[in-house]
Image 1 (cartoon, rainbow, N blue to C red):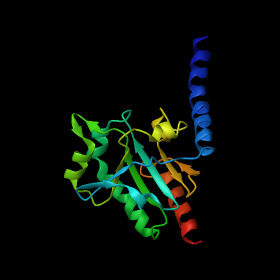
Image 2: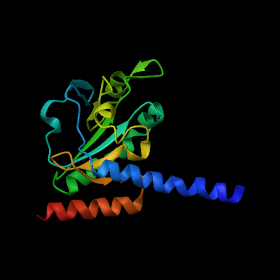
Image 3: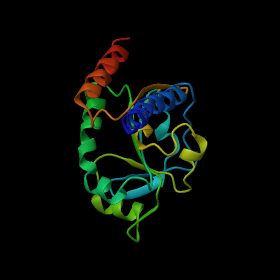
Image 4: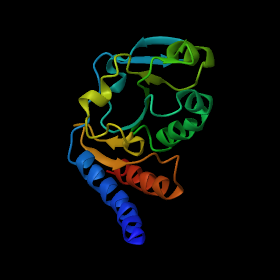
Length: 177
């Protein structure tokens, strides 16, 4: 009996994830209007910097270790290198939903780092509220969307060589059109 129960519990995991992914792929992803952009030591309203047709959104909320994420944020240089390699056909959007980490404000921490790429902030935590299909499962917090907000691909290409290959293949196809 325990073996059957164990099988059912492990079998439900992939099925549940597939169902969640289908929900994301059939939804429209919306970015909050009041986002902030931290770039080279300064914080600005995001404004029209989010107007590209193709966006890779990587959302970091309080479910993830935000201070760990910030301390390793340089790994995202690779996304911006891919952006240049593919002639700017997409925009990486690294976005934080939490405004404070360990008592410090996220903008302050990012400003001090003076990163060579922009990082976006969702100061009112509206992103997950506006996109309920992404909520509560960090595996769905990285999504490539087209200009209409329609998901094209789910996942962070930095996390998986296989996904990175698919991502670059897709970018190459778009670049050649």
